[in-house]
Amino acid sequence: MLHPERERWYRVILRATGEAAVVKAASAAEACAHQGWMVGDCFVRTLYAQPAEVEEEARLLRQMDDLPADRQGEKGQALAEAAIILPLVCALLIGACVVGICLSDKASIDFAARVAAVWAAGHPGEEEQVCDKAIASATVSDPDALGCSATWDNVSVLVEMTYAEPLSFPWAGPLVLRSRALVPR
Image (cartoon, rainbow, N blue to C red; front, side):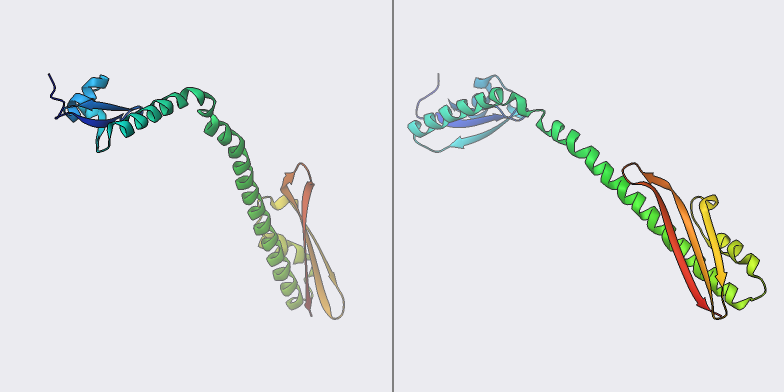
């Protein structure tokens, strides 16, 4: 039989579920055993308070144990939020990749137009090869979608390039990139 002067109040918490209780027992092991739990499965804290305060805390803990039953709908809340947010995040990532590819293609045709214009300015008799040089200089994902035109006058060479981007946006239609390079002769 327990001696009343040796008994203490313990708060025991089951590690696996978080279920908590306030128990009066002679030792922490007995406090766990009182709840039907093994000593290794529960966390025990000694309470140094008046029994009335411990009883109030025990009542509050019992009320808290009832909360998970009231919050059954919140268990899937994180899953529902993830189901809403994940497609948006994926769309943003894919959009960022598409914009990056478009910017890379735009830089490539800008460079190719400049290279072709500079080459044409240095080779005045070989105007037929200007667009071949421009298309060869462009590093785009679909070289067949490149268009080129070159015009000359007495003072300059103008090379215009277009690229029908293979990545189209359903809400905006096909994307056509344009570049112009004007170089003095």
